[in-house]
Length: 183
Image 1 (cartoon, one colour):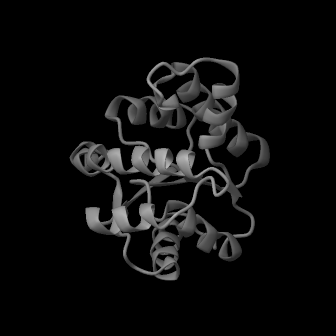
Image 2 (image 1 turned 90 degrees about the vertical axis):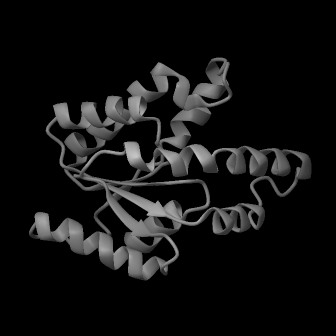
């Protein structure tokens, strides 16, 4: 099983997954952003967004499928993925492999996202780079919020302003009602 936690930058995806980990110790955590970082070291990313690389999407799907098949454990995936074509491509790979995928999207108002992004430090030793990353994240708020209407019909929308524990309760309740024997 895969639990994909989606939402805009600053919505709390990683925080939610961190809240799930102690309550679901057998779950693996897989951050597809790491695949993007590796690819950036190898190939040029003309658009600046590694999700635009077909290879990134293939690798993300292949690795997710392989983790489930190889380790037979649930996989938690905190990753913003809102381009309908890319989401269909990756989720299609998961479906073709017969993997039960639960898709959650954290809804957070724009002003809260901006405040969270502005309060984060991505590269503390490099203030210029830090501001560049914050600007990039802020620029992606609009595409993330407008994409909500294009997400798959079985997407579960959560209030991203709830506490991480409350959100973890909601995720676990949804996942366990369909999958007896889990958390």
